[in-house]
Amino acid sequence: MDEVKRLFLDFSPSPTSYPSTKAYDAAAKSYAASVTKLSSDVQTAIQRNPIEALQLVDPSTNSIGYLSIIDTLLRGSVPESTPRSLLLDEAVRFLLKFDPIQIRYVGSLFRSLLEDLGSFFSPLVAVELLANAILRIDPSGSVFTSTHLIMAKLAYDTNCIEPALKVLDADILFFPRNTHPARPENAKNLYDTEVEPYVYIASASLTDTIKSTSILEYHLLQAMAYISRKDWLKAQVALERVIGHPIKDKGVSKIMVDGYKKWLLVGLLREGRPPSFPSYITNATKSTYNGLSEAYNNIATLFTTDGASALKEEFEKGRPTWEEDSNLTLLEEALVSYQKWQVINLRRIYHQVSISQIRQTTLSAQTAETLKDDGEVLQLVSDMIDSGMLKGKLQVGLTAGESYVTFHEEHDLMTEAEFAREVARSHASIETLTKQYRVTNERLSSTKDYARHLVREQKRMDKDIADAGVGFDTHIEDEDLMTGVLGGA
Image (tube, rainbow, N blue to C red):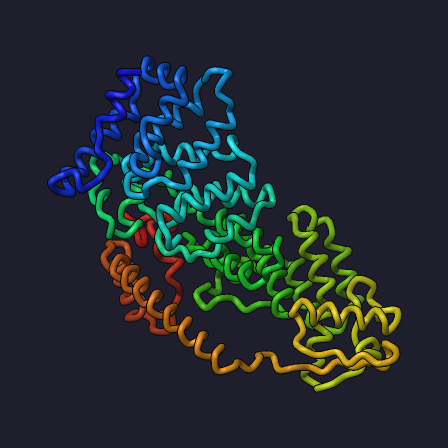
């Protein structure tokens, strides 16, 4: 253990111990190189004396050394007297306390540990640790990394969505550039506490290579996680990132088509009608989606009519398609909501309407008939109000048939205190968005790809003004956009 002690104690983790930040940077890089390339003798010594090795350094003050020790122990053979649970507890302690500055010097080793958390811990614990690690490195959650996709896959596949939400809810603005293998020993700004994460994450090897398909898959998993929680608004936003993903040669991928089908159904659930395409999606892309999703478009068209029988028939006819696309549950959810949206749309005609009249004027898409009795309608409306889907108030009479529902305004009036809080929240959001806009605009406008895009756009406008707005996504190549235009260094 003497050699282990000499090696791991040969670094003062406090920046104040050095004459300058550059001196600290050089020492940290040298130390990281030493402890991440351990000889077999040193590894054996650590594995034979796990408790003593773990006590050498503090995970919160010397994260570089502690990561090397815990990684060596987790992947090696230790004495039976040392329970595996003890090592896992120490790994958790490290992941909750690591220094986000120091970890930049051992990014590759740290990323390797994160990638294997699913095999070390239960899914619930692993997802929580992954989410915490992502936000400890980048509190804003605005830089996409390969760890995002690992976390999203694990969270969705094991139905451990809750601990992942703090990452899934963050707006991603930056996609690291991976034009060559990262070499942390040559990276700059690793020691700078003020530098933004997008500057160093790729060069510090805190992410693996980012591909366009990785980003698409992440947003689709993100949407599916929201769908499982019936959070239709967030699911729709995530799916719009899928269907609006930058494309090359006007082609769309299978993931994008899958996303479109889900987007259409989620739109029905959220709005009661087919959703409108985002403005940045070209007509050619819209036509492609429509041509590849005819069965889904038929459902969407019938959803806004009073043809419950035709909707039910179309659903049954397309059942093999829904099953093949893994959308059967979502279709069934849409069918259940059909009558609910009929009830909601009655507010366009009535301020107050009786339960019996609701029964007579609305149909279930599951049976293509009215509900059996007023009691079922009363329960339906009550559930809609309780869930927040319907803004209204029930006036329950002696019988269900004598009960009424009074529709409220779609948007509740706010108290003065609530209004003040909303103004403050909006002001803070605008300040944050302004800062993010400036950063992304500066980075975008400084790239050659964007400059070439502007030149092409100008030439096209000069040639034919009617074709001016064809679309950003059809002229900048997929890989250029995702790994060059918005990428970090």
